[in-house]
Amino acid sequence: MANLKAGIIGCGGIANGKHLPSITALGGVDVVAFCDLIESRATKAAKEYGAKGAKVFTDYKELLKLELDYVYVCTPNRSHSIIAVDALNSGKNVLCEKPMAINYAEALKMLEASKKNKKLLSIGYQTRYFADSQYLKSACEAGQLGEVYFARANAIRRRAVPTWGVFLNEHEQGGGPLIDIGTHALDLTLWMMDNYTPKYAVGTVYHKLNKDTDQGNAWGAWDPDEFTVEDSAFGFVVMENGATISLSAAWALNTLDVEEATCTLSGTKGGADFHDGLRINGVKFNRQFTEKPEAGAAAAFYDSVKMTPQVVEQKVFTDAVRGKGKLTVLPEQAIVVTRILEAIYESAKTGKPVYFK
Image (cartoon, rainbow, N blue to C red; front, side, top):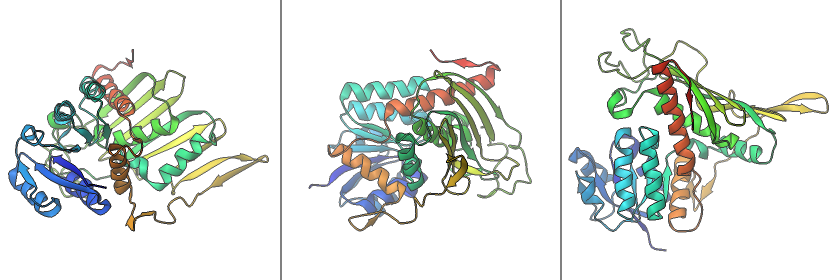
């Protein structure tokens, strides 16, 4: 089978740390075009990961003129929708990094372009592909938890503020930990619940630690003057069927209760959490029980390739491009995540709940 041809737009940390190494490990794809506003970054990525004769661009529209099976969008959040829509309109399938877009209106443009052009669009929520996540999803689909009516989406760091790129720039990113890591936790939670119909959301965001100079940050000191996004955010979401989701996201918070991109589920038949690896709880024979499935005990392999979650993400998407499988992360699901996050930010500004129509 001939290799797919791909281009990558945005050659920064997420491209070099996640997508390019993973697709190289999987194989079957020639990355033939690299684009970045900083030409040296695109050139470096092309040398390390590009196919023979790979081209380098600083204007993504020039890249889109090539014959490609799909493109990666790995740019700051604000440009996700602009680039993805242009790519879809040019006849390319798109794998876009999370979050889907800066807001719901922009995400809607992406979804509409995907449908209009009949091209695939998926979002980089790789947390779904972890072995524990896959096991819990199967348990939920089998009805082991029953109706999940309460959940917590957890994305809490004690002191791990990203100090590179534009993470601290509100204009470029649209927010801080809520849109950065809270998006993973919320996506995972909605997916497990299989519930994508929110009724209303209430939220608060905080700028309490941004100006700290005694930081103890895992990735080195941040510049207090550049830290314009929130350091923590919290949301309360009520779904149309009455289910409740509590969402917590922080890059810096004085807590020892640290847990990133996980969820806690409570259903009519059982519950689940990731507090010490995956734990499923319930009652059997009039006795409480807790199970700890060995979901990640053995590494999965495909053609001798270790299937890390990042590699699985690539395989699922490229299989779908080849018509050999279905997407795991659908744009119709990702757009709900963006819509809820936007509502939490809006509620924090107004002090009022935001109702979904």
